[in-house]
Length: 191
Image (cartoon, rainbow, N blue to C red; front, side):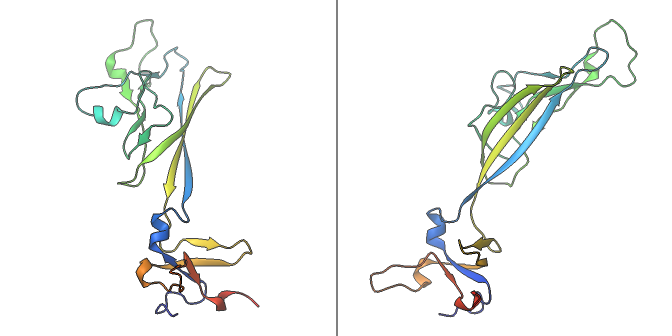
């Protein structure tokens, strides 16, 4: 069967119905990290409780009461993972008086991902170093569906690139009605 040039050399023809059922999916893990620093003046960054009402509160829905996102939460692009406030002490003379509110600035950790796709916060790890700085690491899991141009390989090392995704009705079938999940050009196999 010829697919009008979409199966030449190492290209693969894939069944759309198989992809809809989960064939070829993979998990992409992405790591975000943030540090809560202590300065020499004794001031340190802090984590605030999330706002539950008001402007911007919909971006803080995944935060626990401690201001850190909880593991297992479904996150969308521009959701806040960490509600952090940094102390800006540059140019402020050292004194025993408390700092003004103008010295504080928001330093929220945002999730930046593809629009319209949701991910899962897989893990949150808290650790500290010898200086007392708190390190917060987030591991985000995104399930990715195969698309045109993705590379696949067989167990025997035969590689191929997805050339086209076709509806199941347009693929060949056996006399029992079985359709293939993918079709590779047999001339792409080495002798």
